Image (tube, rainbow, N blue to C red; front, top):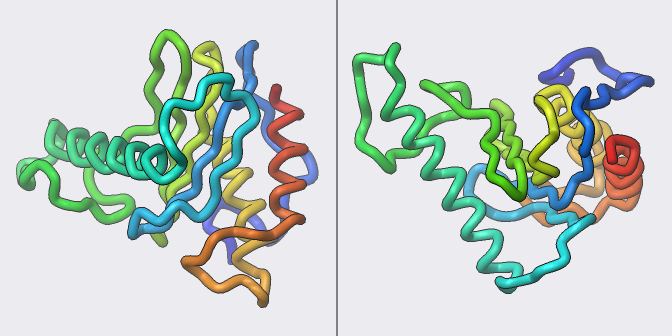
Length: 169
């Protein structure tokens, strides 16, 4: 059973509504901060090696999740900054935007984190990330040859992801 919808991938995936929807990068992390997948479509400047890049991205997500939980105006019990939050616990963020990119984020109940870096003019990508999660479930999680927590090396998933990302470009 899938977390976000029916048992099959929707035949018509959601398409973001804003213009300038070209995706730059995609990360998938497990709950321990291991980068399971990194895809790059439009990144003209490489300033870090891949391991540093992955650590920096996971650290950013960890810090933002912790900060949003700490500043949650609806929760009287404020934990210490830096204490891990369980998926769905406390306040969360979905995206942030700079003048050069937009980072969209979704975390599943099992702690898998999906990060999509796009053009800053891109609209809300929550449905897009849910669709990508459904691709992950169909092609990776249900794959008998895949061991959870290991790098994703599923060509069907990579192909479906690339086709979908090109369709929103």
